[in-house]
Each structure stands twice: as structure tokens, then as C-alpha cells.
Length: 401
Image (cartoon, rainbow, N blue to C red; front, side, top):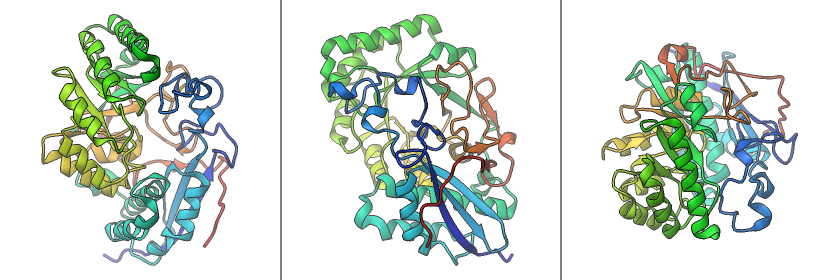
């Protein structure tokens, strides 16, 4: 079969500090008005009073959305989105494009390896550079699927289950239960700067939702890199009587010894999870070595579909689960092919968690949402990732090459 070559790659951005703020899309923190995702959530910046109330106050939404399009010489175009904004556009257009254009649409692993090796000297193995690489990689998988008229999950070997079950991340686990999700993950609102009073307040929140949700519904805590070992250990034990299923991302990404210590000290049966902000394969190998119970890479930040499949293989060899940070279709098509992903995450992006809004609204068209907490594999049967780009959004192409 003669496959086309990649004629051109293009990068666009929307939202963030250099465009219209509050645009949503790939940077789902870039929300307008009152929203649970920006309401006194504990962060590494919470120790500073002027930045404790709002994550937007310290700049969580400055990057905006990155959109990468890859066009084949037969006119077929694939695309993907991530975070990265205008800076990500520069990396794609001025550097990564040389490794993409002119290659066959099936040369995804070759392109991926060249992008990684060519950027080590300024990427550090993560951050905006890895977001850009991930976005290019995912766009190439989308293009390949569209050229072959197959969904990405079939390119990866096919589904190992008929449907994906989801837990919901948001401020209202009780509403998530009513919608059919298997669990609800809540953000913590307090940290070490709040001492034992902070632990008591977050434990009281868990107790409140345990009462509302009943004994069997999963409850989890997302700590978003805001704690130290002592605080995380005390919080875990304070929540143990309420059957907390796991405690997530208590520390900044490179504090591996802190994760090792928490794993040693956590209550028996409570899972320790992390990975959302880890940006390369090697970091997940380290987390696996430490014995983290669930690895949680973001497919749009860790290196794309190509790296996510490698992370899953590392975890599978040790009997560990991979449950990616919610990335909508970019996760769905991959995890339905993994035997060690028994469920997945759905991020509630409606302001009050009262309705199911597509995670990357409004940039994607036909983006599916769970029905009764599930998505059937047939929903994913359109070519590529099965979504289209909403070209009515205010996208800008800041650079060309």
C-alpha cells in the first residue's frame, strides 16, 4: 500500500495571556467567571496569601491552547490539541516541523524519537516542549487514522473491553454519583501552611461526601503538588475512616523520595497515585520503581500516544495500573486498548459540576461525554480520534516556517 507523505505541519493557539482569556479548549483552566476549578484549590503557591484563593491569580491559564495540524500530500489533515499556546507554536513551527514534513504518514515512531532527541538540550524532558511534542505526536496518529479510515484505537490493536467506565473529577461527588460515575475525585483546599486545621477541614469534606454518597461510592483526593510528607501522611490517616480510595499528586513531580515515603506510611489499602505533571518515560519508570499504585500520565503532556503506550507497558510488567489524567478522546482511544486500565477519568468542566460539558469545549466538535458514567467503544469508531476542529474559534497562527 502506498501511503502519502506529510506535506505540511501548522501550529495555532487560542486563549492564554497572548489572546482572548477565558477561551477554554485545550487549556481547560482558562475559564471565565466563577468556576469550581479555580476556587481556593490547594497549590504550591497557596503558602502565599495573595495567590491562595485563585489559581488563575498566579498564572495557571497563561499558556492557552495549542492546536497542531498535519496535512498529507493527498489532502487529508489530522490534528490534535494540548496546552502550550503561542510558545508551543514557536517550538512546533521553528523546530519540530523539520522532523515531520516529507516523511510518510506511518513514520510516527521515527518522528517521535527524533523530536525527543533533538530537544533534550532545552526541554529537560518536560514542560512546554513536551506538550508540543505530544501535540504533534497525537496529530500524527489522528492523520494516520484518517488516511486509513480507521479509529486510533484500532491502529493500536483494538479494544480489550466493550466500554470505558469513568470516575468524575470535580467539586460535587454526589452529583457524579447521580450521573452514573463509579467515583468522585475532589480537590483539596488546604495545605501545610494551614497546619492541622487544614487537615481537619479537608477530612471533614471527605466525611460529608461519604455521608452523601454512601459507603461504596469511590472518593479520592487530588492534592495538586501542594503538600509535604508529614502533611500528606496525616491527611491520609485522617481520611482513612471514610474509606478514601486514593490520595493523588501530593508533591511536585521530581520529589520521588517523598512519594516513596508516603507509600510506606499511607494507611493499608489506600492507594498512592501521581503522574499528571511528569513529562517523560524515564520519570514514569522511576514512579513505577517506587511502587506508586496508579500511574496517571497526561497523553497531551507526557509525549503523546507513543509515550503513553510505553508507560503502560512498564506498569503492566509490574502489575500496576495506568489511569491517565483526563484528556478526552486522546485518552479514550488509547486506554480502551490497555488491559491495565480498568477505568478512566472524566474532568467536569461545567462551573458547578451540574452538567456534563465536553472537557475541551469549544475547540472540539463531536467530543463524546459519558452516558451513565460510560462510553461504549462504538462511540469511538470514526476515523482518527473521531473529532473535528471548531474553526469558528479564534485561532491564530503566530509563526510559519
